[in-house]
Length: 213
Image (cartoon, rainbow, N blue to C red; front, side, top):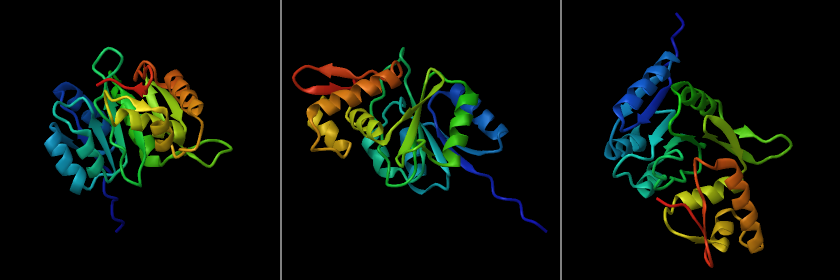
C-alpha cells in the first residue's frame, strides 16, 4: 500500500488574530499544515527546533528582536512588513546560509500569501541570462524582483532600523567594498524605484542612507 506523503508544514507567526485566522485558513485550503504562534517568544522557539518547510513571520509583532530572529532562522522565510500607511519594519533577519527570503507588504490578500509560500517552496528563482539568485518583494500586491546585490543592500538597511549606514558600509554588505561610493547611490536608487512605498529609504546628508523604525 502506497504511503501518503506527509503534509508540508508552515510556521505562521502573526499577532493580529483576524489576519492569522484568515491566512491559516487559506494555507490549509491549499493543502498545507499550519502551526500558528502569536508572540515573538513562541516564534523564536519554533524557528529554532520546528519541522517547518517555510516560516511566515510578522515583523510588526510588538517586542520582536530582529537580531534574535536572525540567529534562529533555519528555514526559508517570508517577512510580513508594514505597508506605506503603517510603522516601518524594525528590522530584517538576514537568515543563515540556506533558504530564501521574501517580503510581503501589509495589507495583503490571503491568496497572495499562499502564492508567495508556494513560490518559496518551489525554490529560488534565477534571472534569465544570469547566474545570480533573485529574491522577490510584493509591494501593493505586485511582485518585484531583486538582484543579490540589491537584496544585500536592503537587508543591511532593514537590519539596522533608524541607523544611517555609509556608502562604504552598504557596498561592503553587498560584497563590493572596493567599488566607488557612487555605486552605492546607484543601488539605492534602483531599490527605491522597486520597493517604494512598501519600504522608504531615507537619505542622511553627509552620512549615507537609513530606514526609519
